[in-house]
Image 1 (cartoon, rainbow, N blue to C red):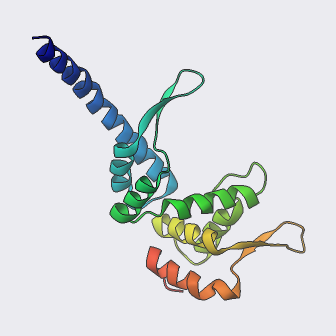
Image 2: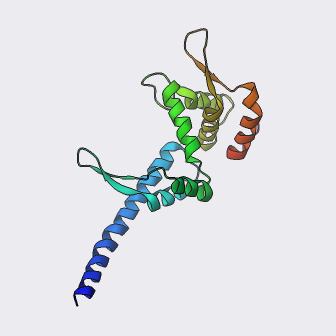
Image 3: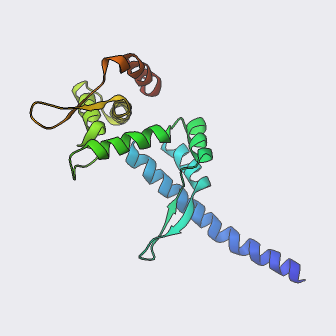
Length: 172
């Protein structure tokens, strides 16, 4: 009798909150994907929810977090076509080389990519994909004004063009 009661208690405790938490994890993943401009946000959110755990922050607030493990990154890449490592590197470079306090949309290689995309007439998901790819291949170069600029080295141009077409469907 105790075993049946224990199993039914465990099932009751885990089924209700687990379903609610799964929905919350999905919603968190969806918000993250949309904020980063991923085209396949629903797929990203499903994989995020599968790998996410609840973490408690200093103020007692709880949130969902998916650790960047090889299994998680591989599943995002294979199921959703999202290369998280490439995206993380692009965002890190954007923050590192951007103006202090500049937002991601304005500063760094990512911001430069968005400006180039706008100049070429791209918008929406095409522009964000263009900017992510640009940020991956661009490197900082000094400018006469003192503020650095970003450019793609001639030796990387062929690989950049190939990746731009592969990831975004944009041919230069």
